[in-house]
Structures are given as structure tokens and as C-alpha cells.
Length: 433
Image (cartoon, rainbow, N blue to C red):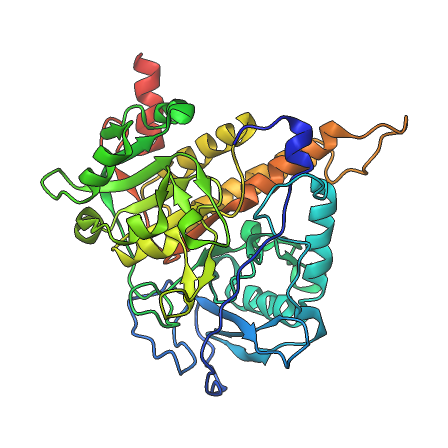
């Protein structure tokens, strides 16, 4: 997973899977205006407009006629805003140039990938306009959940919203402007959205590949049960004698391929994880963080007679995880190690701040650094040489966008231990040392 700068720069890829969701009935229109509030645990009928306080976007494949390109469409609901009916057109073809999923020789430099994502965003006008209307109604209280059933590796965190000057709304990337979560209904295998707020509290259960042993330092001061062997780690996931576990963390290598047997995490296959009970997750509803290449990608598979998206997010959520933080691509060099450190510190710093909001702050901080270092560069400098520094700066931003959160937008995480009382307790403890 460690590459030199040029290898990483030239290996940003674009592979994706696909899914064939069942046809849906029409969504009834009509929604009443209300004061922005957080979501409670409200049951949702997948065939009705979701009647909750967070905005919901469902993205699914459009079944093309034979010989036509694959495409997707979206439909959306939000209290106080007219629903967006299923919309699909020429701008919703399956986009091959915007995936953060793979790095391979000959791939586009980071600045070209980012520019491609911006152009793709311009093609999503019906959706970005609808999201901005939700922002006008709900302001900073807006929370958004995306149920993407396409398997197209669509980078929703990087979707660029246009500004609305008359409403005082700045433009920018969705994952930096709104508390954003993704969802995958792994338990029922349907297309419902999350209804239960998770609040896992307890120790850290960690697995660390030798290459990523330094990740342990992030959890210094917290109650922590680290493992260097994957077998003992998986055994711990199936034991319920230990104290409650707030976070399950894996720092390891991951692989993605079009063959299900080649989907691996710490050299363990998807099928082996699928068959593992993970009773600890069912008991504690722990947040799971999979710091591994491609851990958030999905493979459309029907080799066992049922076609649906397979991935590690689906396995851990299906076993009871209260949420998952995963990666959409290859995040393995030294700079990515620093990013994951900042990510975990941001998520664990304040037990009262929802995970989705913490990730929003993490991405926003990465974007501020990106702008301070010059923003999106040209490919070459004045002397005609390749602008490696500018491309590396862009790559760091893309890394921050690769981290995706699956779960309820109000779910939190409280780790026990020395700093369990929040960031001020951490600062006081550091001062005492």
C-alpha cells in the first residue's frame, strides 16, 4: 500500500460495481413545513416518502435498453421541501472518470480527477438545486443520508454545490457543508433508511497490521485491547465477556477485485467475515472503523443465486455495528497515515458530537489546508515541469474525501479511559505530564 508520490499520483482509478434494485412505486408528493429538528427513531415504509427531519436521497440504477449505457437516477425527500421525484437523464450516465476506488499506472493526476468530479457535479443540477433548497429551509441543522444502491462508486462527499448568494449559502463540497451519512440496509436487505440513533460507549478493540502499528498511538489514553494477530482479533469480536466496546478499529491492508474471493481485509476474505458471528457488535452496537484500502467498496455479485452488493460495510452493519467508517480507495502512504490520525482524533475528541458532524469538520479542515497550499493546480509549472507538489496537495484532499461514514447522522461515540471526558480532559492530562 506504500507507493512513491508519482506512483500514487498516476494511479487514481475508476472501477465500480453495479446493482439491480427492484422497481419502485411512485413516491407521493407533499411535505409540511416544520422547524429543523434532529431525527427520532421513526419507522419508515420504504414505499412512502420518509416522514423524518433529516433529508434522504435514494440513488438507484436506471435499467437501460439493450445497447445503451448504464445510468443512475435519484429521488429525495426532506421535511418542509417539495420531494424530488425520480430523476435520470443524460447527465446521469455511469461516470467512469470520477471513482476514487483504484490507483493504477496511467491513471489521471489528482487535479484532473478533481476537475472531473466538478464537471460531474454540474450535471447533477436537479439534485444540487434540491439540496440547496433544503439548506435554505433547515440551515446548519440539515442532516443528509444517501442510500446509494448503484455500486457505481459515486463520490457523494465531493459533490459540489453551487452557491446561492441571495440566500447567503456558500458553495462547496457536500461533505464539508452538510452533516452527511451513507446507509446500506444490510439487516433486511431492502432500501429503508436508518431509524435508530447509536451511542456506543466503551473501550477500543483494535487490530493492527505490522505496517500500521503506529496507529495504536492514536488511542493512547483510552481503554484499549489491541491485537497484532487477525485470528485472536476475530475471536475477540465473537466474545461477550469483556467490558463494553465503543470502537472496533482495523488498521490493515485491503484488496478489491471483481472476484468475490479476492475481496479481503487483513488477508481474510469477505466470505470468511460473512460467516463470522461478531456477537460483540450485536451486544454493544460499536462503531467500526476500517482503515484499509478499498474497505468501503461494493461488488455486485450473484454467484450464490442472489444478486446484491457485497462488501465489508455490509458485513459489519449486518452483524450489529452502530456505524462504519470506511475508505473508498487506496489510502496507504505516510500522508494518509497522518490523515487517519486526524480523523480518529476528530471523531473521538467530543463524545457529544455526532460522528457525521465530526467527519464534516475533518473534511472541512482538509479543504482549508488544500486552499492554503494553493488549491487546485495546473499540471505544469512555469518551467514546464510537472507540478508534483500541487498534485500531492490535491491528493491529500482526495484522501480526506475517501473516508465515508455509514450510519445514523445523530449517532455518537464515547470512548472510556483517561480522556473519556472529552478534549479538555485530554489537554489537562497532557499539561500534567
